[in-house]
Image 1 (cartoon, rainbow, N blue to C red):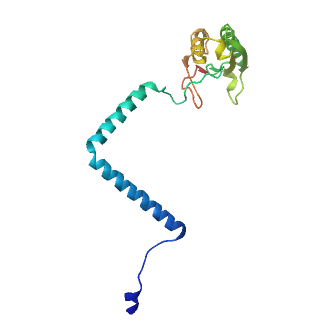
Image 2: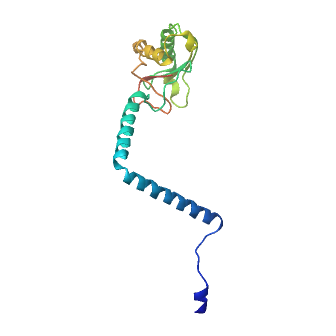
Image 3: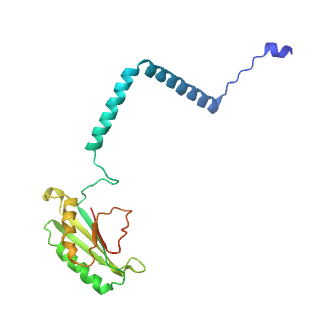
Length: 181
């Protein structure tokens, strides 16, 4: 009983646990101070809120939208897919027709074309990797050039509905052409 009169119990932690406790107390005290400051200046904080809200709405209109922003890296990839059951030789003819139409563009520097492959049932697919001239030497961006390819390719049975795909992207249609920049 006498011990309880002379000894004082202190609950202080040392080491890493003490550091964490002191850090948490510092954050809590800072939050209490800032909350008190905001509650004392309600009208000014409402003005700041309206200003931030207005700036957010303005920036929504200014900033480009999209999951992956457009960038012109002087290349375009075209993926062709024909209906199931299309033979390899038919697909070669279709890809050659599309390649001839695409190759008429004066801003193409080089092009590589693959037909078939890609595992089981891949004989009805074609791929084109197109290298464009340098951006400084052409007036159109890669996206604008890709947009011009969507129209002429409609003459072949592989065209389907044009869509822009960026990986990972899978077309739901059985026949499609995907042009990526």
